[in-house]
Image: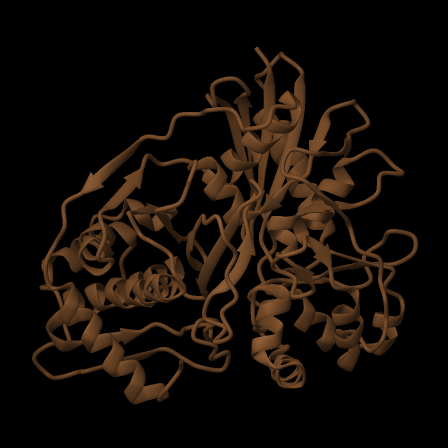
Length: 466
């Protein structure tokens, strides 16, 4: 039996899975927490990874042949000439670079940036965080020798000393200084954002290339971004749209052609197989539900029960859930709003359902944007911790205007990383064929009215956000 490890280095934790390379069967797993906040010492990720990997393989006697890391996108990891972090990493959900983003986009024009990089940067993107660092911490910026993404950093620290940092085109496409069309870095764009500084960047690897080896000889695969890892685990292909409900909410699809959306709603990323992954991201997903549950004095199971007792439309309540600002639409300073309140509809049941509807309406808007750039939605795959909620499933089946399926619970980002590790180990032209099982959800009614009320509320509160 040949074993590989897939690592998901996410915002909140590291998950590690030990997986049988030939079949995809999970034989061990572990989770280790990360520090909270929007900036983190990246060494904490390395420690969490070591602990998660050790615990996941504790009961496994066979050696580990390969490992790969899929990590949270966009984060800025800066290291000095000795390979030590210059400052805490800025995470994707850190929006302090909003002013620098506005200046950068105005200078280079949205249409040109979309053509060059596939995306119009928002404060999540690495390039904007480098602009912030240059402006606000110039002495630290002067010490930066290399810039990496979170998955690049973890993969590099797993590898034996002397290994050059590496990345893949999937994660690189979220930096704002990479060309999905040519598969090359855009160092001039980076230098312009970073005050003329030219830090070194990771090697760019193909989907199944090897990045290095650990000191024990375990192969370290290229790794990728978290959304790319999930798509790989799900074996997503053209016609499949994935809606992921984690800390952030993402809507993405695998396509044969890249996208370049000058409005900035759709990010034109690459995937982990050599294709493309147009994606829409919202900052507010599962935390909307946990926050609302706490407000109502219950847990997620209790929120589920309350929401299912309310009618579609929540009695006229509309929850615009921009609790942490928002990325899509680009409203980093926005706050959440509960509107439509009347004496007769302000009940725990309606508040609970409005939170579910508001969270999912933002993602349904994301699917509409993917369709606008040419994505065909044959089915929607609903994943993430909140995807198992009966209320979430009931609402989603009426909002997405496509058949909804819920794959069986799994750590899909870590599983995708494991599949990439197995692919790199095999040297084959295609990744190994691992089964994916999913349940179809019965469609529900009332979705059009819910979407219309949500759209009207957003327009009333925030005006035109297109």
